[in-house]
Length: 471
Image 1 (cartoon, rainbow, N blue to C red):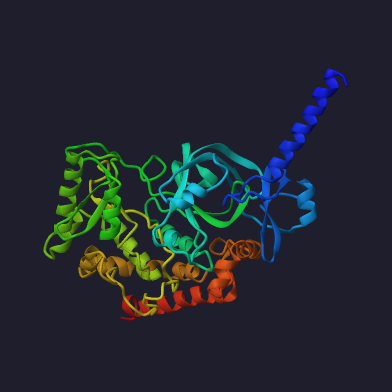
Image 2 (image 1 turned 180 degrees about the horizontal axis):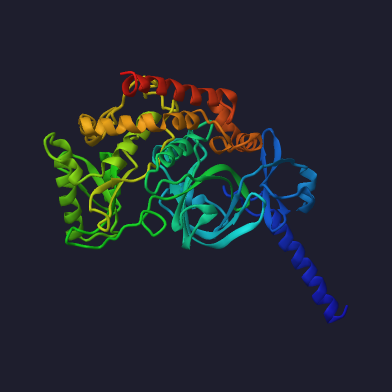
């Protein structure tokens, strides 16, 4: 055998080894026996469980593009295909998510690609890191499907979301419709709340493995296309972005060397911007917040010198409409922009999975209860005090009258913009996370799931009518 023939034989053997490796690499949970099918420019893992084998295809991929390995042909997976959704493909440096699942704060580097609903590649770039996101939702075993935070190595507008480097991929594991986070954002967009934006549903693949339907949205962050403020003025006149947390989570944040403070009335705040705040910056932000708090809690003081009533009223109304148990308690952001009038604004809402009847067992499921954003120990005293002021109640009432018809459409999931997921998406979601949904006796996207959601919303509005219309 000539040297050229021997080299050719070696190359053929090497190619065969590489091909086997491509089809038998580890998936996002580290399984070494995963089999992949080539779909255009993407490798997609065959998902197997006790019920069978499935190939979950994103929108825009034709079956004619599929190239099967011998192992995949032998398994003959059932093909399930998404419809009219974009897709995100993330590949991690390790080839799995073991480190991420083991430690919520661990960041795994990698690459990310985004495809539109037609299957066209619209972005490809480096990933500074993917990590776990959530508190109760991350640590509970009941919700196997987890949320993630991703940080991209440059500021981009990912799938039309506001440009920045940080994005959230919300699992909506507790929500059998997957819609509550989008509904909350839609309410604030409807009211014209500054910086409010809806996210976008997307099929998520990590290391080729289908992870389900996720809700992609920009993280609450500062930036030209996010919350646009100026910062870094130790004299106390600069802008800032802070988050209100209850005591336990605040202490966890402080243990990570985050910057924060506690007001005289025990409101706990974490400072997100200025990042790595110096002590004099922390003191300046705290001093301003103390003045704002005193004005809010003192009935005879003009609180509007410190607080933007319009944004606070829109936040209050959103939380009451949804009956959101985290309203004003946790994941509640506020910002100050010194280039405006230097007052404190309530930032758009963030986390609505525990709302509209989707609650833990200990939570009150009565849609006819007025929260005043102080439903239990740990709730914010600010909104309760604001609502006791006649001018603030009038602002909320006027908003309710003005937007009531649109609120009803959103809460009833009327129109394609308010019910964007189709049967194909819900079926793929169910097949991928069957054990989680079967464990609580639910089917995502079912009529029963939507009846709970929309029925709660209608009953909630009828109750609020008695307060703000007929009352």
